[in-house]
Image 1 (cartoon, rainbow, N blue to C red):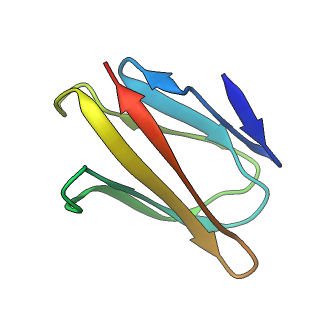
Image 2 (cartoon, rainbow, N blue to C red; image 1 turned 120 degrees about the vertical axis):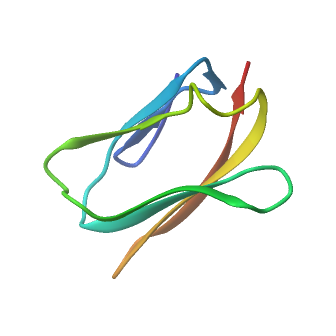
Length: 79
């Protein structure tokens, strides 16, 4: 489990990603070939968000979180 200034995520994803963020943001998840596999806009800063990755194959994914003052990206591995 890793933490990055208000964002918490599992580095070895087994099915979902859960994070706490500090602003209203858009969350996007891309597969290894750059296809958008998940997008959620206007994520509430006071709530936890999750991406249920159970229908996606194992592999490397890029998560991008963006907002007015936020631009974070990190990779996760679904096993």
